[in-house]
Image (spheres, rainbow, N blue to C red):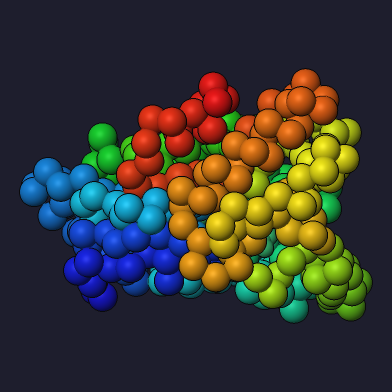
Length: 302
Ligand SMILES: Cc1cc2nc3c(=O)[nH]c(=O)nc-3n(C[C@H](O)[C@H](O)[C@H](O)COP(=O)(O)OP(=O)(O)OC[C@H]3O[C@@H](n4cnc5c(N)ncnc54)[C@H](O)[C@@H]3O)c2cc1C
């Protein structure tokens, strides 16, 4: 298994922000992952998992302990006519195209979401009116306490808007099983292409970014619209800025730190709170060392 000491994590996140982790492991297969957990539990060393790093703000001060990157377990296979099984590290855009090419509909929404299957299950990733919960049948999870692989059905995964019951400190998604709907390849590919093109028009994809920063406070009230109306598009903190194209996207203009980003998020929250009395909650997850004051942005106490 590939491993690296003092690994610079910025390289592995879409925001291109993050200090060093004591150790970075890149398991490429389930047996490598399981023996890694055996080793880490014997040594008592703290560990954290992540996938594509596309919904993650990693502290510029770094991360203590070991970080396990699950982006290299990428196998996708079709086990029944309308069922696809994907390993945790398979990228959603690739999975969406893989399904489309085989005449299986349901994952067209995922083509522009640059995360992995594991991260998408944890976050119940979604777009264009669909989400993972609509197509997922079950997920295989390594349960840290039981030290065993377990299968959770869609109901057991407890999906809600951008969340699930999967707690990355205790459950590691190893693979997922999707039940899709057969349709004409041309129709699925046209929908996939449309969704992809829409992204390029509406999101600042040529800048390092972390996708939507805040969750929508209600289905008919998007964080992007509230931020835009509150004038957040002009906000900037050091090298971190709110995108002029999409007010719920923060971009790294080159060398931004997690500290700058958190101050910017706080200012975005304040704008919307002042204008609409709504407290936005971050969609992003965090990893590494953050101060108590910084954490308040996540706890809604800032
Ligand atoms: C340009 C852009 C567009 C985006 N558009 C969308 C969108 O339309 N809809 C949407 O929902 N999201 C969107 N996102 C956010 C992101 O891509 C999704 O949330 C994605 O599902 C995260 O997957 P990841 O592998 O990158 O997760 P990471 O960012 O690596 O991790 C996210 C969380 O999941 C945990 N985790 C990751 N893998 C596992 C695993 N195997 N087992 C247990 N825990 C795990 C991590 O510990 C962390 O807490 C976008 C992001 C970008 C950069």
